[in-house]
Image 1: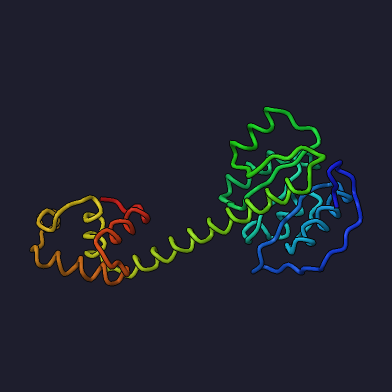
Image 2 (image 1 turned 180 degrees about the vertical axis):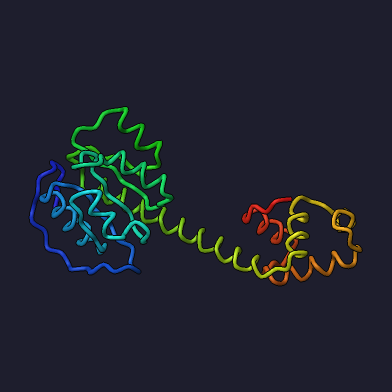
Length: 222
């Protein structure tokens, strides 16, 4: 473990075996001693952990799309931590990142935080600071995944709508009245009401406000 002075100390911990369904703390650092210390610290708090000596090793593991967070050293063999963080973002990987370095400076910190890092910890760091950062990162990952799951569910429901029901939903979201939608689509107002009712039922919208919020979440074209 790492004490307040950054020194390694012995600590008893309970083994937690990570799997693909359990959020894990992924540690990428070429310092084997620090990896072991962080592994002990995180496992003592009940977190599942996975350890990697380089960015390439992490990517080869296939862990980038799994639940959890990434504790990433800036100075790594090959690709630097900051460059790797940007590569993950460019690839659409949303796993929250905590950056750490023994050679940090203001430009590094600014670059890392602008790229979406949860925290930037200089070495040596306090155990509690790291644990707080991990807790925040895991909470962010859980929220992001819940939001994505809700969006995927909405998209699945939307895909079940007929073409006309989708047209009506998109226009309802812009605030158009049934009469206006009927004119746009060359339909009768009664037919528009039927399409709107069917679409609301299939989407699971209990109110018109729910229906509009769903359309906004889906970013439907007008």
